Image (cartoon, rainbow, N blue to C red):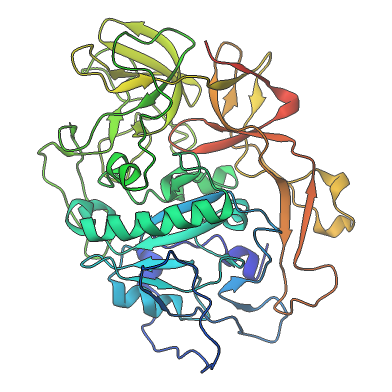
Length: 451
């Protein structure tokens, strides 16, 4: 679509550098107001109000920026918090969020001291995740830093204040404290196949999810069994590799200008690499959505195609000695999981989806045509090219996500038939498909207990 709808697929974070470089630095002053700023934060956490501008930028009703008015969590519902990094300095980040021709997110957090700025009321929809369904249902939090240099930028002060804020928001809006709802930008799927190769990968391999969830008071080993035995086929395992001692090879340069380049020494990371066979010498698995030519994934810092990150859940497909295979993007993906130092734990009481015939996979959960009172509002949905095939299984992370489309096409919130949530009873299931979340239609799959 044209106008603001297409702009909502722009996104800050790792992978956005070329676009950021094209935006001129300028000052955008907020209109003075005597009203108290609408801060949404826990008591005792200082938060600065730096408002994003809601302004018309052209004569067309759809020419405006840089967010959308809404009434969340009433409409649409709030289900996620998206963790980003800025790929910019903090000062530059604040300049961008105050630019009415750019886009907006809810909060920014500074690296050196964890200082928090809020830009949007939580009820309104920021343009930050590159997927309109997720934007509609998510709070976006930007963290100053660069994904390829995360171990330098992601300070303890940043982690601590971010966790205080996220714990508050999760409690206030009923958002589960797990890795399916407190997600990285790297877990947000593309809207359509053409969007998959350009979806962002922040906060990247150097964000310490296990430590972060400890600070949230929701350790990622909750709901899992101990380290006492190997996982069995059909069970669900949660990736828990640790961080400081989980040294992985991450190489190459990012797309910043100038780029940040890594040496070839293994570094503390939040993921386990996934191989095509039960051997460290085998190639990494392939992501046909990201690279339709079928090349294996790489160790490049921006290539998340063969990474299972901390806290994510997968179904065991096979076990060979110290190696465990999981179902991942339509294939068996193997990771080293020795009994002496396991990288995953078995999850209790998990649910999975299976299919009798190949079930298409989607990046959004929009309604079918019957839900739209005006046929011109209908949003066609394109399968992503992955499938859930017979014999495979994927972990259910939300059995009843909203099936809806939040229509916000014009600047004026009083425009008839606009700023409305077009919905129908939940027709989708949200699953961990690979390194990102994805939707399958309930009519195409069976939900059952794992194992």
